[in-house]
Length: 241
Image (cartoon, rainbow, N blue to C red; front, side, top):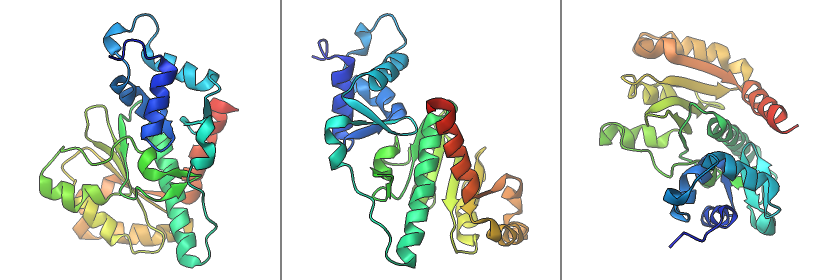
């Protein structure tokens, strides 16, 4: 029933179902709900999708590998200026998560991305629609999925469907809760990253050195806000400027 659907029409349907926009990685996966893949010949489909969103005026780039329906740009969620410290903290949190989701979606070694904070907004894009997964896949015991993995700020899953990197944005906490969450996933080949301001790195190292977290010590990484922002901006410049 999808035989006559063009690439652009199928892309449009994916975006309509995803809040008027979609990252490329989601388009690669979801487009076949609207188009018959068995009938495709010639170019690699992913390249064709890239070509359509870049050249068809129906689509506008709104992020790192993220495109929206031009006709519905005014319907994207508006980012409200924070009025107090709590709102400022939440906005910073959402910015880091949004950048990490877009970076993950852009990398070939990452198959899928996930976030727990689906309603938060980054540059007029809801985090839930930036992620390619709405829920954590069943890669381990249900208890660990429900109590730890599903509450992660951002997860990058590799091509085998296992957590490749997990990120927790820690603006003011002592990192302990994040480490406890990471400990539940120590049996997987996963890198555990805490994102925070540079001045909190000493606190991170102090907590990391505790015997309770020795099992994952070598895999605990500290990233500053600036490092995430620079990675995001450098990738944008490399591919779009």
